[in-house]
Length: 474
Image (cartoon, rainbow, N blue to C red; front, side, top):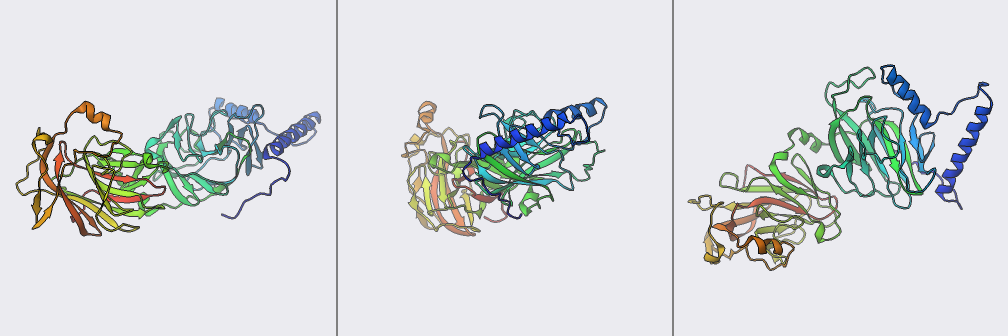
């Protein structure tokens, strides 16, 4: 998209300029009304649009409005939109396009020309009847993305399963579009009451999130909302749909049943992407599989699709009730191999040198070597106190028997363990890790009661991995 930066007014704030435009518009309207229908053009306000839409509904038809609806914003030919509250600052400013999105023209973008004071700008889609006092996504019949924190909102609630933190800045391009179901007719005469559409969002041309929803009667209209002084965007309508990426096709097989917990991690098919704040170790994103490894499926892999800035990605195994926001290996009942430093963590916040660091395109694997006579003891009542750690042997190599129920990290789940009592454990097993198909190393541990669950941890913005919970090798 070509640059759409508009020259600033020097010596004046955007708010002052916006208010001046409002006063000029009101004065012009009064002059036209004074001409008493002498052939002068008529300026239609929000209420005029609302009334005309209501009239057509009374007549039993739903027609597409010819102009936009807006409140507390100033529009420049429906291109530049700036926050301009009529009364007190802090009210929601809303703009809804008069042209709905269709299968042929199902995408639009806005360029943030000014983030204003707080950057509380939302972009999304809304029904024509969306209330003028509410942000996009904060009322029924709308879906919106907050560029301030990257959160998605649908029908008044935050869509936690699809959130991705992608904070937009000035001159970033944020887009929104629709993908219709196959064989869907989006024309004016179509019955779209029960149809589903995929609403997706982009940042500078890269898709960052999406979710399915019902298409409301009358369709979805491009919409933008604001809330702080100085905010301004340039809207570009009538764009062709954003092309689907290869990994978007994985939506057909969503793999949602493979995961029991996703904390600050967005999942689409086999892909996991970090969606937390990424500011401290308290912002770890965690994905834990629904089922533990067993003798049939004893190995899983991840491929680093996007390492982010620092590749804070970890693969490992955790107990079923492992706490959120803790990387595998940091707490009791877990073990993890970390890509950023190549260290292994075993129930402690202190890691030991283990293997090479991993980068974009590398495949990291984790699995369990079960003894030939192994019988599942996930429900064993064996107390770790009666089975002290001891040395073991595997393939002629001495390995250390790690007791993962001993934690030296002083972590946030200590209180939980105090109330729950001692951990139950089963047989000893060998945990091994791989990099690009080659074994990095192994550790012998006692499997906790309930088994070991495949787990992925991430901590950096843009980090993304592809997961294969049942690879053919391993």
